[in-house]
Length: 426
Image: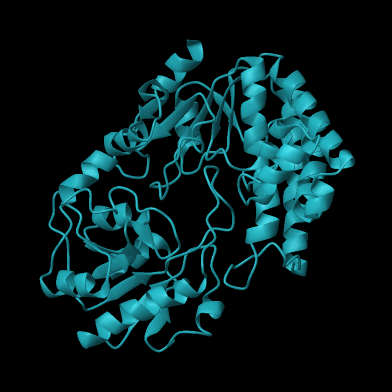
């Protein structure tokens, strides 16, 4: 064995097409790594409430009727399939495109691509991907269904109605299949970055024809690790309208602390197995330093994937008070934010609150065995980084702020997606 990674072993010692194994990688990985009560919805927990079952039934029924309506009364042209976050679809519509969600994503707007064959095929396959065991996912039956689904997609894409595909990532099964189908059908594919990268490797985010990022610095970081400059486009972000130069607030009155979350899957460059005990260690370390400044309580904001009740089995809930606000209100309410590598770093600066980056690390590796990445790796002196308790204490004592000028380098303004039409026509 050249490496100790189960999927690599299966890829090298089975007759299954390596492309299909790669397409299924995320769903196979989560059966190995996305477990435990520290996650809000671990893969091993299949229980669903009665209300959620009813809600999904109603959404599915409304979506079905909406598809029928569009098939009967709407002639499709200049279509874009988009699973991108934020208000990207609205911007694409302004450029003259009909924008549809893929049929495996049920949204309340019911604007699913109007094709019943694809709708039913994707629902059946999604159910299999959700419930099948690791062993069954690699069975001849499931592999055959994957191939049939891809062939259906190719037939639909070859009709010429769909002009482009825009995704939020290239990690999950359906996204990878879409990208492969686009290549076969000669249709351009894009990723619109859905967060400030917490990892850079030459495989992930590199499968589509183009990668759309928020700012020049992000593009620069991708180029440094080997991405082609020609495939990366800087668009800005629809949420961040304008950047002000007001000084950042920094006080200990109302501190917001973010958790150091763990991933339920693996990246594509190498396997990293993290110690979930260090999720607790991170918070205990923050608490120790803050108590030295006389802080008696802070607000704690877990990652959306995390379970606050699991944390409360290990930490003082009187000190760490659960933050239930939406993110914008949470930051506006705060006088200071302390957290790890996170997109909330940009959000905090945008709303005028200092963000102390606390990343306990040894030789550039954080406590979950991931490499620190810019701007969280001390490579930019404008962003003070605390890699141990002494450095965290020093930043707080001296009120050392982030240089807010970095925000314009990570988020271009104004937001502009007009290049999409040019690239599609090309």
